[in-house]
Length: 78
Length: 314
Image 1 (cartoon, rainbow over the protein chains, first blue to last red):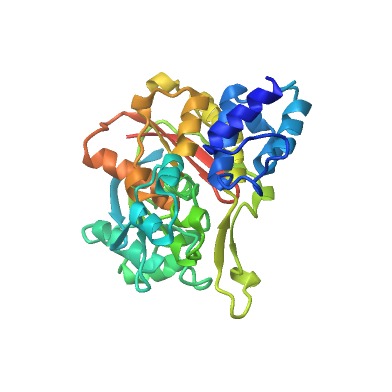
Image 2: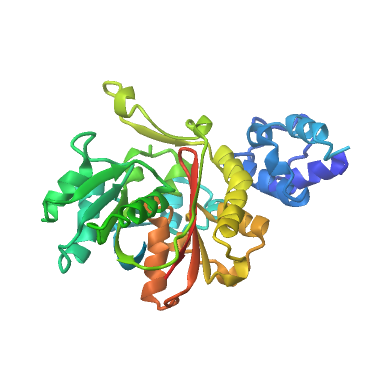
């Protein structure tokens, strides 16, 4: 998966009108609350066929940069 | 030798709260919440409705006609007392005989399965024929008014379950415990952590509990099937702890369970902690949706963190 696709997924999960990039986080995106985080986790898990839920650090990753880094380390994004 | 559930009774607090109204009151986004939790109503106990009172009300429906209880197991994380043992107090208040074994189990979402396991062990004793399990929790008494994620999820309630000795095939129980998640769902300032002028307060990191559930519950469910030599096809129902919509939907997806095998009622009752599974069983029996010989997989998971699962035969 490309970085741009990850941004699209996060935007859809959060149902936000704001642009999503590596600087986006729960601090600057109003819709990124605990429910939004659950949506991101479960959507990524579906997308990566149950591999994302094994990445426990993903649960507390509250910035797009962190999410991207964790997924990249696991070789799930390019 | 094993046991069979012959009666289940329920007692919910009088105060039924609509999540829609609760959201309107606190200006929370109802649609966003309901999309994830699926919970439309919760029950909040009043000041006078303690867990032990709810427990006794539920159990009376059984013991009114049946005083021959040989063992009493009280499952709660809302104890009236740290000592004496709450089950001893309940024995007296229910007017049960005195030559009885009575003890408490401190478990939450896995509590009913723990209770059932203990009942099965006790029924191996020649002198024990009837075990009464009572599950009762009042988590909402310790939730702060601004705690959106807990307030829209947890519900109070009690269930009483009569387990009688019956000759049937022994069932395997599978347990999983990981106390490293102790802070993910916790009642702060409780027990010996009590701090003067601080009310014990419930907190939950839903993200971590979800990740734990998604990672380990499917493994435990598969192991439960394997150890009991039962296939998913042979099951009439799978009853998960009624945590929330997002949790149950993800377990269904991960385990590829046909929807007609899932029974759920979290939308109407919320997450009543130790009572969610017996509450589902109560409804299945009442609606005559199960019959003798049906196999049901039950799986509790959550606070601890812990998981407990087995297959029961109706």
